[in-house]
Amino acid sequence: MTTFVPRTTAPDADPPRPNLADPSFWQLPHSERLDAFAVLRQLDAPAYFTERERSRWRPEKGFHALVRHADVVEASRNTRVFASAPGATTPEPARWVRALFGDSLVNLDGPDHARLRRIVSRSFTPRILGRAEADIHAVAARVVDDVLARRPDDLVASVASRMPFEVICNLMGIPERERPAILAQVDRASGEIGVPRSARGRLRVPGKGLRALAGMQGMVADLGRARRRHPADDLISALVGADIEGRGLSGRQLGSFFSLLMVAGVETTRNAIAHGLHLLTAHPEQRALLEADFDHYAEGAVEEIVRYSTPIIQFRRTLTQDHRMNGHHFREGGKVVLFYSSANRDESVFPDPDRFDITRSPNPHVGYGGGGAHHCLGTHLAKLEMKALLRELLTRVPGLRAGAPLLVPSSFDNRVRSLPCAYNGT
Image (cartoon, rainbow, N blue to C red):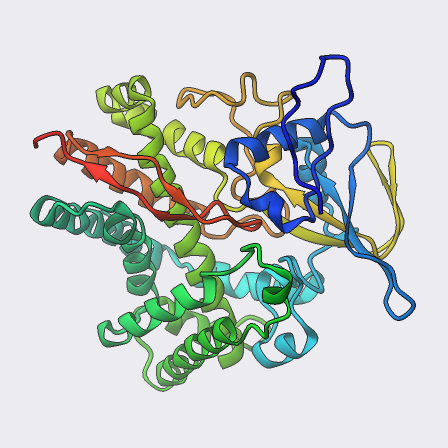
């Protein structure tokens, strides 16, 4: 196996090429991984990485790495050629897993994806969205009330995780009694996604995560059946009662969507919040700017936090036909991986990309996806949550300072395990 070592040779020497298919690469410090992507962006064509060598029984398995902003955006928007099926995550879900749990929105294309997305989009009615926005501010206030009362020493569980979890549970109409079990299932289901493992670990049957996923989906499917009989003013009722082509979401589709919402919506927003609190501490001049005129700078701060931290590192696509992009020929059936964390540091798009700047404009980051049919449905809610929480914390806990985050080595998301903090005597 080969890991990446930053260049220390003469400037005219060829820099070493990182191996993104090597699990040990994802255990390198975050800064070294960013250096590796900078090397890959300078190549004339997307680099190819072998995940499994060809044998007499199995074909070679590998992918081309899309690391430039333009390539990631083009592949994101051209879903006719760059398909999410059979799986957008790495590794791709096995057929039996898809048969058992159903296909998530992120793994669907074409009419199937469009129909499910219409059901979800139309269920976010103005009434539901208006109530959600009011609830977001109320949740942010309660979270900060508890920070002032308890002064926790870690901001992940007490702030960054709690905020999106409560918002989504309130939006969906999850009863309070079910929430502790769901939170435990989310932690088990998402805890090892994209985490590098040893060869022995990779051979292990992923029973813990699948059992957690099954438990979570079954719980929500039961709620969906109850809402069909007795509708309430919540998102679950809207989803199962939606009339798109004469159908709403089935129990399995509801469970699959909820799993996506909890793992993607909670985890990504949680990590963005955690990174944001650290970044505003590490860059006091940016924090001072935001505190001086929150309404003016809040939107830019949220966008820059998402660009700089890039909560989701990558998604995978499969070529449905031969295709030429940016001078390179891709073959039907081939795999590409869209590295959002690299695209968000592309020097040709973001001047001084390693600088954290809440006034950056324009800021066409791909932190919510590169556009197109799979652009994140929860973008609006995530931004509202981040702004509401930052306003409460900066206004009511001015002495709060976040330390360096403890990161989980992962090829999928920029996950924060813990975030120590201090209060500067307040």
